[in-house]
View (cartoon, rainbow, N blue to C red):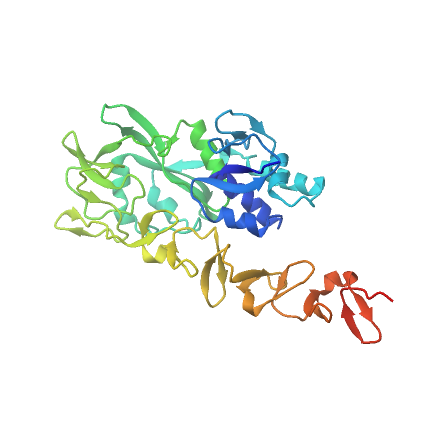
Length: 386
C-alpha cells in the first residue's frame, strides 16, 4: 500500500506534540516535523489513511473536537494519537494522551476578568513578563483609543493570561467590530480559557478579520508625549481628520513600537528595525529574542527550542544534540553515551555496562538482554553456540 501524507494545522500539532513530548511518546522523526513549519504541516508518511489529502488537513475547535478542514469529518483523538506514536503503545497509554487532550478544553471562563486599567494588569507580572510593565505614564493612549484588557490572575498570584480588547474598531465603511488582540499565556489551558471567553463575548481575532483595515477611536488632538509598545493596532494615522491607531501600515505617520515611549518634537519615534526573527517573520527587540545556534538565526518563541547549558539554544531537531535520561537535560552527542538496546542517551557510563562482543554500552535497565560470560568475565550480547 502506498504511504499517504498526513497534514495537521500548526496550532493543533503544537498542542498534540506538547502532550506527546510531555509523556515521552513522540519519536525524533516527529519532533523534527513539529519544529519546522509555521502553517499547515506535513507530519508523517502513513499507510493507515485518515482520509487526508494535500488540500485537507486536521484542525480542532475550542471544544477540542478534531476534524478535517474541508469535509468537517470528525476524527477521534485516540485514532490520531495512535498514528503519531509508536505502535508499541497500548490502549492505556493512548487513553492517557486522550485524557490530557480533553482536559485542556475543560475550562471555566468565569475566571476571566476585564479592566480599563491596562497598566495595573501589566504590572501584575508573570505571563512571560512585559516590556511595558511599570511604565504606566505611557499607557494613556489605550484609554483614549477605547481599549480594555481581559486577563486571568490577580496581584498575589500574578498573571496567567492576558489580551487587549478593542471594542469599537471601525473599517473604512464605518462598520464596528469587537476584536481581541494577541493572547499571552502561561499554559495552553489558560490560553484556551481566554479564547473561549472572547468567543462567548463576541470578540473576533485579528486573524479572523484578516484583510480589514481597522481604525480606533480618536487617540488625541495631538500626539502624546509617550506611547507604549503596541502589538497590532500600532500604526498612527489619520481617519476622518483625527489621529487614530490602525492595524494597517499603508500611509501611516508613525509606529507605536518603542518600549521607552520616546517622542521627537511631538512625533512618536519610529520603530527601528530591531532583530529579524525567522519563526515569526517579524523584527523584535534584542532582549525578547533567542539566538538559535544550529540555524544561525533568531527566534521569537522558544517552545520549539532546547537549551544546552553553557552553549545556548538549539532546535529540537539538531543532529548534534540529544536528551540525556539521567540528567533530564540536553547535551552534545559527542559528550554522551547511547544505550545499544534502548537507543536512549546518557551523560556518563556510570549506570551502563560495556558489552565486549558489540563493543558498545548498554544501560543497566536493559541488562536482562545480556548474558555474562563467566570464562571471560564480561557481558555479551550474542550468546555463543556450543
